[in-house]
Length: 390
Image (cartoon, helix red, strand yellow):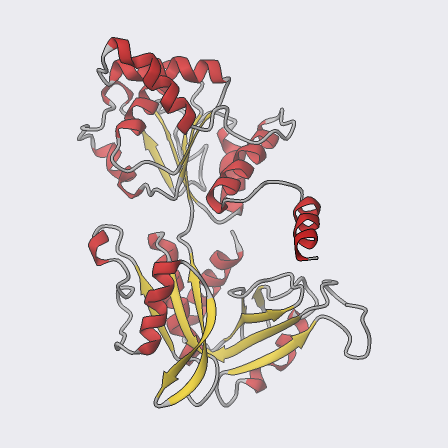
């Protein structure tokens, strides 16, 4: 269970018990910092800490003073990961400055409720928060409706909002997909506000329920992703084998098509363009039918990977072309075009051989694609950045 999932689980327990709590949110950093703006830590009345706001050097210090600092309401506090009288960093070794918004249940509750809903529905969320003045901690939320795209940038359901400049900040963040600090006029007073854009919870759709699916599922769940496992073999796609899967399906392989009305395919209606799919049944018939079905869907996953040699994938795509009734003389060319769109073989070159290292290789490439990153060593990236800056 990832940090946000743990925070939401403990928060729900506290809410059900009507217990108070303190939420610490990183709203700004200066210099190097282990955690970035948006990082959360929840403090419970009995002293538990869930989540982190640094690499471990600030958590105890924050917890020791958070309750009395928030006795009169939300507050912004400055914390340094470097000694005030020297350059030597302590704890995380970052040496930067972290600004935290500390608040109690009254103002933190609506934020955590919105985060829970966005997490469960797998939708992005934008949160605009006032950082100073008498209305510090006041928020506005914006999200999207997956089922009705024309209503994008509307408020999250069940959260009551009044149209105001703060709401505009949240909706602008949804449009630009950017987090930033800005000025906003609240009650004729210009105050600082921070808008936090949080992407939708990623989804990984694994087609194949063999033994090598299990480490892929475990690692994706550790990353906090929604994970679906599907296979045409009912004796493999079982809860006993995949207890932590968010979704488990037995595919109607023989009848699999874009127009299929089989109830078992209804579970795939929430497959998003931001999601990733990996085809790894090790069955030529299943893989080809799954690829034909996925390529014919109106909404495809943004990443589609296929386990195995590229030569085999091309053969799968040629078979998929036949299944989709493409003209015989056009199938080979179309298969090549599809092949250019797929990640086949799936994964990065990490020297992977075991199921566990293959899972790491696959998810590393998925993460690279979904974040548009380079996958280069950080020392190489940072050296290039410093050269440009210099």
